[in-house]
Length: 319
Image (cartoon, rainbow, N blue to C red; front, side, top):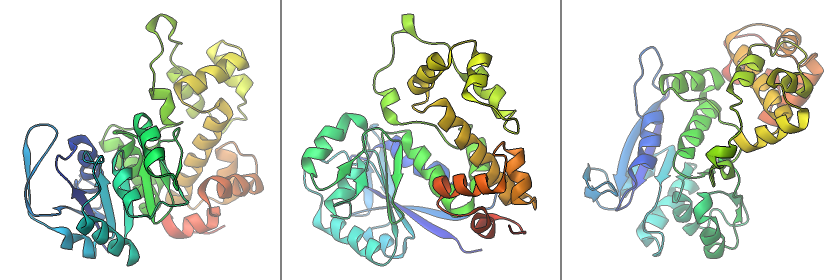
């Protein structure tokens, strides 16, 4: 098995949680799961690196570690008010130039933008820093309401915990939805969170907080094979379709129809990976009625065909 080398570049003072997001997803051996990644940490200069939590980390690798990395993670950058060290920028450009994937978590997007690799491209960062980012890097198209953006060679995430969403997404891209779901299950995390980050930007008043959607989401997830509609979800929640749509937007950042479609495609991905069922059968079991409809929806959301996805991640079988 080929092991994918993930190297996190830390800069003083290092944000601890953002680094932990990458370490937890890429660096932990979990019982019963194959270890697809080798995780390391490097710094501009090896030695003790202070953190924002008051302790220091002993980092033994320097920038040369980036020369053989398959993925480079930038887990936040507290010193973004100052220009990045030229040696760091050069090392990141070299890594990208030979094919390494560069992944920025939260304020790490500022460091990635310093390389010029985000110019004329989409990126995100913590909603609180979006205006600052746009002013600093006017050539970057900033999306303030999204958890992460993956452009293939570069990827950025919104604030803090969105780094976990991005890292799990990369596992899903590298090794399939079923494996990513197993990793997420070990972490007691959802394998995919819906919506964007602005739903977290300002908490609603507890006096007016709407009822949780969790019961209706669980109910719907168990009935994906049925021809559920938004009206069915609204009836289950005992509200009007308009009220349901508003609650979905407030709590999940997406509409009920979009949420339902994503759940169906996620279920289809798992079946393509883990079973030999035909595409027609899978389409019926996830409530998409026909193979043609599944293929169309699948290509829109996953950017490939069910057959192509099965060839990459399935155990056998074809369309």
